Image (cartoon, rainbow, N blue to C red; front, side, top):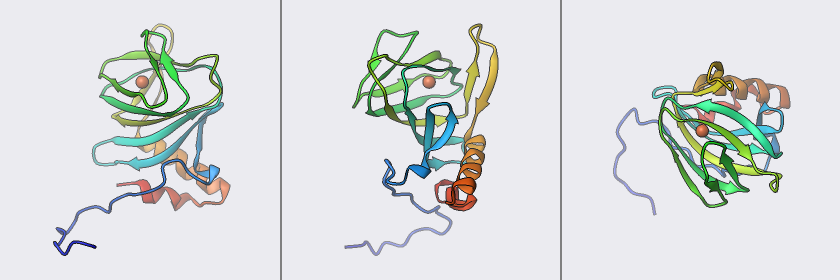
Length: 163
Ligand code: FE
């Protein structure tokens, strides 16, 4: 039964999708053996939600967060070299702004999938903490456009996740 309460003009459309996609073409490559699946790409606040998938063990990246990150592990496990905990399937993770950490998939794990809600940017750094790259909601959108244009979904397929 649907409510009859009127919705204010200008409210953006909701998003309700199967997060783990049936179609593997939705996974956008961002590094060797590393993919993301866009869920919500916010061009007003600079925040985005995606699934991260890694299909090998080892270091994925070292990075700094200027803003808070919230995660939920859907499959597999991973850890940060700087901390003694392991994010297992079903774990919730809060990463405070200012953190610099090194994401690693442990040797006994061949695949992990994690939901992340990220604001601002991922700032990639080297061993000394110097910036070597970054990602934000706009670079994510462009990666999606390029990948979906190339694999037949079409560049505008990503538009359904953009607000
Ligand atoms: Fe992180």
